[in-house]
Image (cartoon, rainbow, N blue to C red; front, side, top):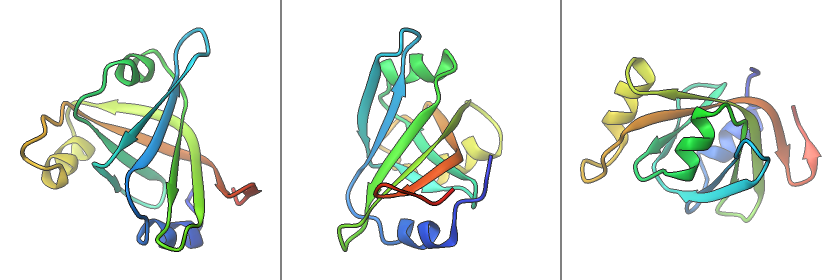
Length: 125
């Protein structure tokens, strides 16, 4: 797990629209979803609320790594790749319950721990 570069952290604050979150199943088949209920927990972790996951939940619980793609209001893209943790209790879960809209179930907080970070094709971490 590594610290997200400051430039990417600042870009996160300027992200626009949903993110794309990708996992893989045990056979290596990718699954990508749009997610709108996301937050930067700290300088190493992005949290996605598990509101309506199915294949994504199964992939995460089977040990999938993941990637997250977002775009800024200026059209610059960033990708964060890393390991994933599934939290149904604890600090990350409780924090997610605070910012996740009340009309969504918030089954769990899915924490993507940064291991690689890209700006377009340029590797930053």
